[in-house]
Amino acid sequence: MSDEPLPELLDLDLEELRTAQHPVLREVLEGLRERAERPSEMLWGFNNAM
Image (cartoon, rainbow, N blue to C red; front, side):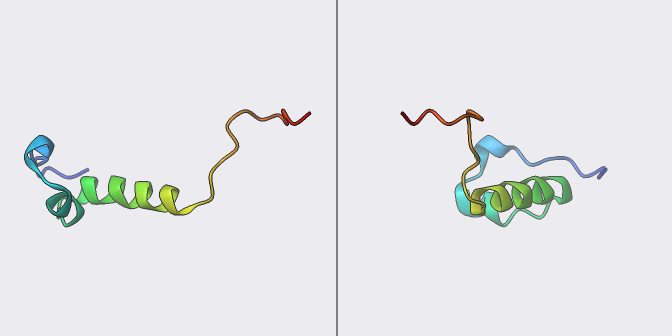
């Protein structure tokens, strides 16, 4: 874990959030980007087609 304090996220616009240099925040954002690029996951686990 980093001892560096997190930036005040409510004060950041999207560009500042995208380029944030905090190591923990950067790791979280990378994970979110990876999930957004994957195809949607099935939400219900069953086929409701009739």
